[in-house]
Length: 395
Image 1 (cartoon, rainbow, N blue to C red):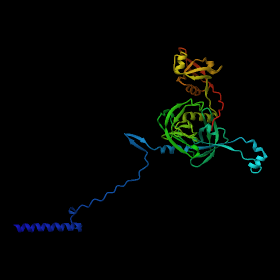
Image 2 (image 1 turned 60 degrees about the vertical axis):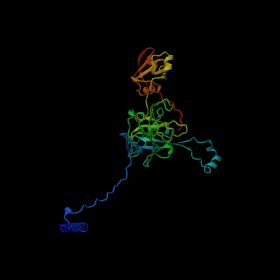
Image 3 (image 1 turned 90 degrees about the vertical axis):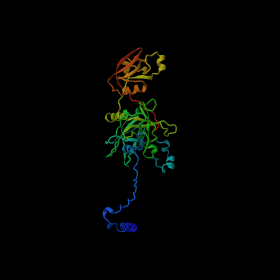
Image 4 (image 1 turned 45 degrees about the vertical axis):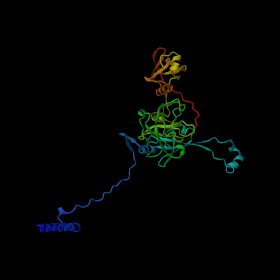
């Protein structure tokens, strides 16, 4: 029995050894079911180049991290404007000795030219563009440079110093045009981009947020309803675009608060609704017509209301009325407090000024005034606002 067991174990050992040799050296000799499984191929993880990150998710909220698409949409329509004008010739230029030493041996020297650099926004395929009046004021030569390298001489369609808006026209084909945004739904905290040509270094895009709305009483323009932003705006940005995160035009950058001449994070833009209304009036009528009633207003404060024993604390106090003016003919008198114009509440002088200016001349508007203890609705025939006297302004 022992001998049989020994022969069996030796035979199994030899068979297993033979199977190992065959499976290793000639696996094809074996049936498919007995072939050893092929070793797993080594896995290699291929990491592609990461695309430009546009947004990230933080706490379940998708946060935008790039505004490149907005810049691409709006930037081509923002142009650089170079406005120049001849300075007054010095009387010494007629002096023969002065001309001999300083004017190419007897030839009169060329007139010096004052040059200003600003920005503008193309708003129509027909070549109309909006800029600030102070950018081109007094210029006799205006050159517009597009981002694609083209340049053109611009003609002035019209200007409105009271809103600091000017409309130019260039004669070029296939112009990039900005889309108008909905400024009525803009809120404090919305992201905005300022696009322009600061300091003449070339087109620049800066970002920030809307810091405040309806800024007025700054003494910049007659009609003020500015969008305030902390997007960096510097000299040369005047007339450029303030756009939303989708690249739509919200305003025309016009001024900064600065002690050094550079950005301190307080910039102001004319709302696109105002700029568009002025543009359409200048194109169709050649001028801007505004309503006027001939009063001298003052903001009503609680202190003034208590001193005069008035029944209201919000409104605009009329301190003077022009004789034979629209308000005088309608019966409005000093001491009246205007609380509504055409059913729209007014609580400040700037609101009153803008509300009246928006009315059409020769139309009758209802002006609600608080007179003593009574509220009186006074129908007033609106007149046309007289032209403003030009005010000197730094370029």
